[in-house]
Amino acid sequence: MIALQNTPYFPQDPVEPKYFVGRDDIISALKSAFESAIKGRAANAAIYGERGMGKTSLLIKLKTLPPPGCFVVYCPLSSESNEKEFMDRLLQKIDLDYRESLPIHKSIIEKIKDFPEKVESFSLFELSLSIKKGEVDAYRAFLESLLKLRKRGFKGAYILIDEADLLTTETLALIRNGIQEIRSIYGFPVGIIAAGKQRLTKRLGGKWSPLARFFALMETELKPLNEKEAFEALTIPHVDWKKDAARHVFERSSGYPTVIQLYGAVCYLRRSSGVITKELVKKVDNEIKEELWQWFQNSWVDSPSDLEAKCIVAVAKHGTSATYSQVQKIFKKVPAPYLKRAAEKHILSQDERGVYTLPHRLIAEMFIEKYGKTS
Ligand SMILES: Nc1ncnc2c1ncn2[C@@H]1O[C@H](COP(=O)(O)OP(=O)(O)OP(=O)(O)O)[C@@H](O)[C@H]1O
Ligand SMILES: [Mg+2]
Image (tube, rainbow, N blue to C red):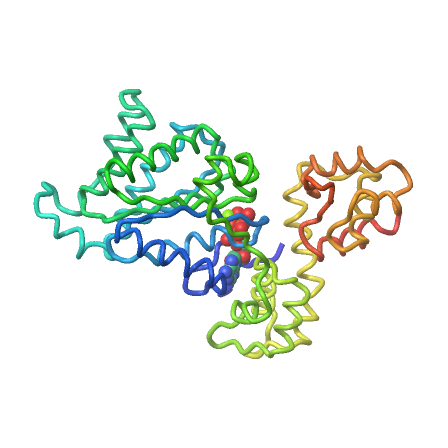
């Protein structure tokens, strides 16, 4: 593994907001959604995208964009969350983010004259405790926490949920009911922005199911970055990326933000001057592939058996994706059980149309290099 932490790039972490590139359409749509909230109306949005496509980076960027008076909380989940667990997480994050965002909102919320405490002393700790003791249920805690924000002087609020795939359907229903009540009965505009790997509309029973319509009327898929954005992501002060060097990164990465950041970091470490040339980038190609390969292997549940590996090589020979019959033509046995096991081991993914996909073309190349000879 390469020691990547001391570079001005972000191959292993969400990108810092000031280095965030692209996603202009969704950013401007959500920025105006924040503006509308302080004028009385909030909307919801769902964002989905493959692993490493930039969902977390986008939510963290969004957190820096609300106008004064629109409270935004970033709530990442780390394991499957029922109503109580979700509320517990949310209340803690509201407390933390309240303090962190005070500089943005202070001038607005200080104007609330009849509030007994100082602006700094806002806390939902008591409410958290009441849920834990079973004195308050999750639904009531949800309403109370939002009403407390309103009372504190906020004009609207947005809840950004990361890893939203981990919300149970019951929790999604609680959120919907709570938000509908808070919007229509209490007149407080609250919106949800949920990001995950899975399309919410699909999971919630299609475009017209009531839950899907509530959460995902505005649904966006994050795609790879384009060439201009890739160039911007590489460009940092004091380092001069030659255009053809950046183009090579764009071609090799296919615009995948993780791979672009990895190229940035490795080229930065291996440079001998402030200029990054195409020769340098080509020199690190193999190092990048090996590093990605190691990350990828770490995400496997288990290594592939010989026959599974041969089956995956058949997918890799088509680039990153292949249909069942394409695999069958190359792989002489019936591929179904091998593909199924490879998917269970998280080595490739299978969609509902029966297309098998590896996470990146460099990974496909590595599969052929590592396992191709025996097939
Ligand atoms: N808009 C962007 N500009 C520059 N770099 C980005 C951008 N979006 C993502 N990245 C980089 O891509 C990588 C993956 O980003 P991030 O963690 O946000 O993706 P993710 O979709 O949340 O991934 P996961 O599915 O693993 O949660 C990181 O290295 C990050 O720095
Ligand atoms: Mg993420």
